[in-house]
Length: 205
Image (cartoon, rainbow, N blue to C red):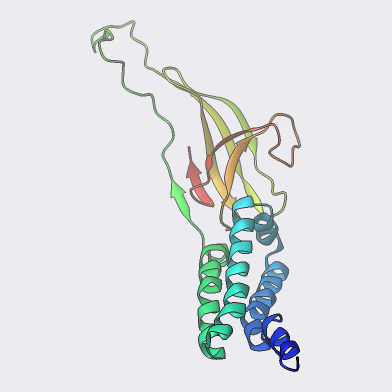
């Protein structure tokens, strides 16, 4: 009877020493939000990033609860907790402090289909296959800084291409390109997702 309450008190709460790494991670996240709020808000709006952050927090807290009960000391427990936190920092925070530049050339007409007749260099009536820019717009940031031009390019012999030129977006992970109907849209609802953004600066097709 006398020992049972003691055992319950030892099993239920998280050891105080095991809270050091999660608290440090929380303070770092708060500092990151204050320093780069646009990128931090973009991370919060990304389901993949949100699930990753929840998984990292669960692993760190779970290790802090389990390892001391297996006889691990505070230093060893903190070291294990620090591994997923450092991984999360590397994958989500570090990309916000470095630019990724992509320089992709302007779309050009593709080769003629196999078996198609060729006019030949001597034919005066042959007209070159052209690439036409049918629409042009500009970027503005919603939750973060962004600038640049967007072109809708239609080769005469191929599908339309969305081209981003002079792109300059505040660095961050998990950026995607969506085509959304209507002017002034601030969310991708009802749009078509094209692809991940391969870099935050430069020219991309």
